[in-house]
Length: 94
Image (cartoon, rainbow, N blue to C red; front, side):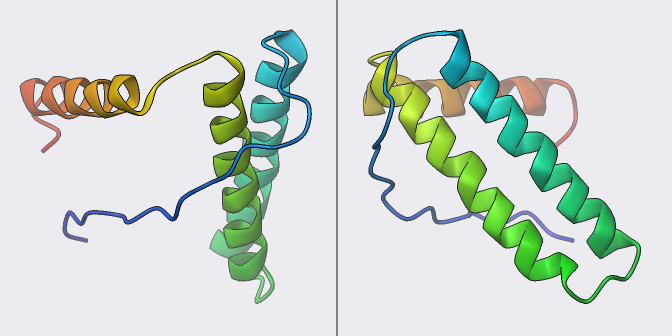
């Protein structure tokens, strides 16, 4: 597989936007559900792909909610992604 830029749609935050442990754990819960759906896909379950995509969207939604709740700005996210890319270059992953 080659590298690609993944275009993410705008994600509107909603719901319980309190900057607390519950919201952070909600992200972990959704990520675990995404992993389970991915494992089913890897095993050949034909329903795995739509489930993986659905769970992926749930993870993205919780990440948007965390950003809103904790006041993380678009600029901070962009800088964090640039920093992440640089760290991975330095580690030889790109």
